[in-house]
Length: 258
Image 1 (tube, rainbow, N blue to C red):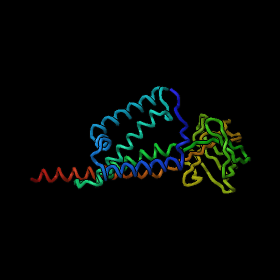
Image 2: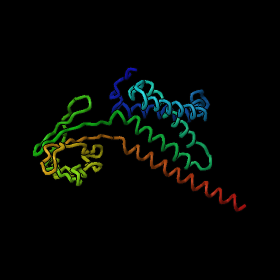
Image 3: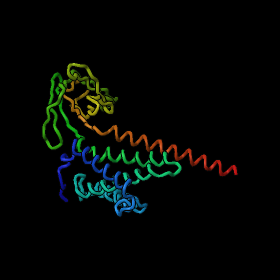
Image 4: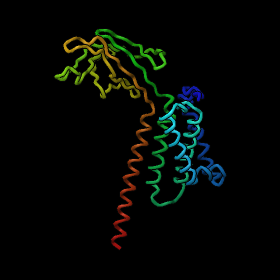
């Protein structure tokens, strides 16, 4: 199946503008015309089960086959429908006088923010790799398609330390870099924050026999501008789950005391 469209078209500020526009339209519909067919259909419990089932099936097909790609129109419409559904359910929950409304809002709004951060923010995310030679400096990185970008930083390698097991296999390694003249150490799973949105990871190096000097290392820059929105949604869902557990425990205790 063809990719469908260029996902970079929905990068900032297009994704923000579309989210704001859709959010305002859905809010107005929920407030002024709550009984319209669209609002009733998207807020129905059956819509929840249907959309979750479709999303689960889509993710399985995406992960196990090559029929779908994240940039396909099907993927776009399915997740857009799920986000619209969650938005309407959350808006209606905010306007209702139901008990335990805080728990409801935390869980639904948290899931909404997490989905928006991961789905809408994917167009602004990026990964680039660069190879830095021992004693060299570079300010150019490459995407998966081979296209080059000019970095705002000059990254060099002063030395590369490798610790070995007794059998000669590497046990641990660390790159000692310079970033715009500042000394920085980067290890596997211990990235360096280039900015609020960019992290620098150590992914590979020249494998040489023990005692020889490593000639280069491979670094990866991962850009995730929407990660804070995603994290906020996850924290909200965790808080909602804790509140749900506490309220259920309180209800059980009150029932047993009767």
